[in-house]
Amino acid sequence: MLITEMPDIEITPFEISLYDDVLALWQCCDGVGLSDADSWEDIQKYLERNPGMSFIASSSGKIVGAILAGHDGRRGYIHHLAVHPDFRKKGVARRLVDCSIAKLEDSGIRKCHLFVFNNNHAGLSFWQKIGWRRRLELSIVSRQTAEDRSQNPPPP
View 1 (spheres, rainbow, N blue to C red):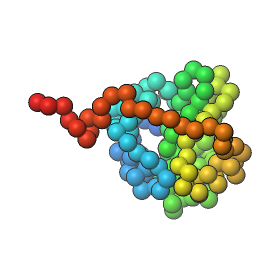
View 2 (view 1 turned 60 degrees about the vertical axis):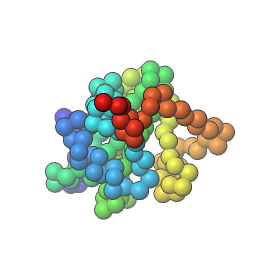
View 3 (view 1 turned 180 degrees about the vertical axis):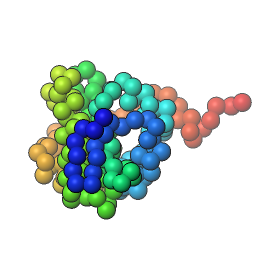
């Protein structure tokens, strides 16, 4: 299903079959923090839990942008917005965001959050340019809920 079209760019839903190409894109883009939570299995679960909310941008059959988006029933979340450096400043990121926000709104979600590393100045600038507000009064606090098995596999 084609969602939106720009010259030479197609925006379509993120399907798990595209995972390897999207992962390669995330890996080549500064500011995208990947972890064991970005495994094929975990992304598949995320896409299944949030159907039709994440998108990819492609040009001539090559993935040049991606956004992972979903919600918890109350708030929306955007993860890993990335556009290949050769395709930046062409509206690709904004189109990806617009597609995800529209789907979140269709699900009754009225507010969306995202995470940006403090040293990702280009990312922070982009989000502020398109109308997002940096929340300085909040801090993120995290904790592993299970042992990181990628670093310490279970004993045989």
